Length: 309
Image (cartoon, rainbow, N blue to C red; front, side, top):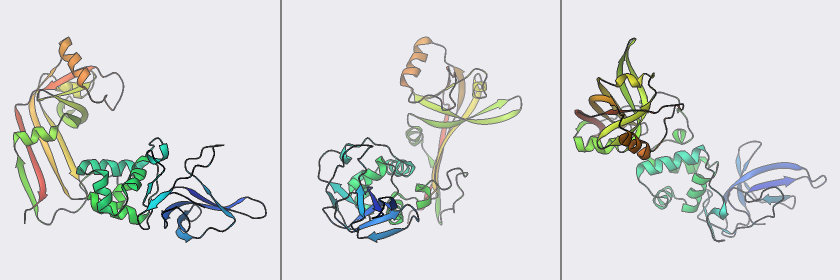
């Protein structure tokens, strides 16, 4: 009997052949994939060390209905589910289908500028196992999540999606925070080329601040909207546009403020250029073909970070 991480261990009744218990193999102890295994049981969600008996068999994760069993020979790096595959190819040829945890891990890793190899090494796991977590709807152990959260500067709850609907900035302030003004070049770098920002406009009902998907083109802020929308009221007036980032895990962040006149872009060549360079379509959907451009006359920013020792 040989298994790989993510395979299912099925225990059947010797008399009827019906499934009595099943669980996901989340840890390997031998380089050739032979028992024992760490199994997370589907009925209790508990992880136990299992030496399968004659009434147990492996259901491989590569299998589809009616497909033959495919074996790979994993290499483990201790317990906890780390392995690499000697059968060649990438992840046994599976098409990436990441779960929510995998997406969050990959996003935090990219935000920290870390490669998979660097992250895996610091978390004490094999790069192949980290690839599995990022590419498949995996259910990693608490120990794996704790190690990854420590490397990525976040929390297990954040990787699991806890607090995703809460307002940002509810964590504790830094013990010794440092508030620093940002120069124009730093502000432009943080604005980058695109993202989501907020535009402040005046309406008949009073001031309003609304989020928009924006692009940076030749130092100008451009966003798409509908003519009858709130963001469209920016046209013909001086407005404020703000972008920020809050790092909940580290209790730090930055904000950049752009102030300048807004105009509607009507020149066909300029509109075509904006459409060609757009990274995303507006998240609210619908017909939003009106481009508004904000020419910065004032660009400022601030960053909160730990005080230098």
